[in-house]
Image 1 (cartoon, one colour):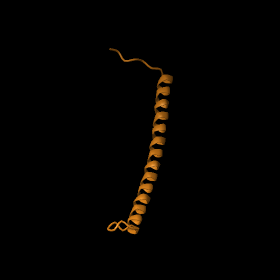
Image 2: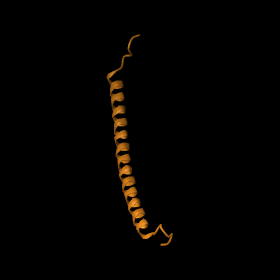
Image 3: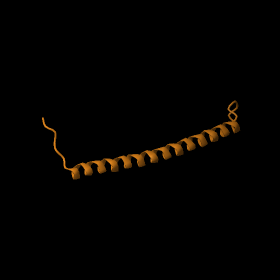
Image 4: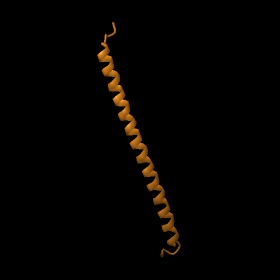
Length: 64
């Protein structure tokens, strides 16, 4: 089966479309990285708050 023939203009369009897609993926990965950092910071803060709360609660007699 013969391969399709493309003009230079068609190939350039394909390459630039791929480049646009790669740039879009890069932007999405950067956003995901930032979101991951925000989630990690929120988790750490929540963990610290839980530990602080546990220090103030006496579980042995159920009183605060």
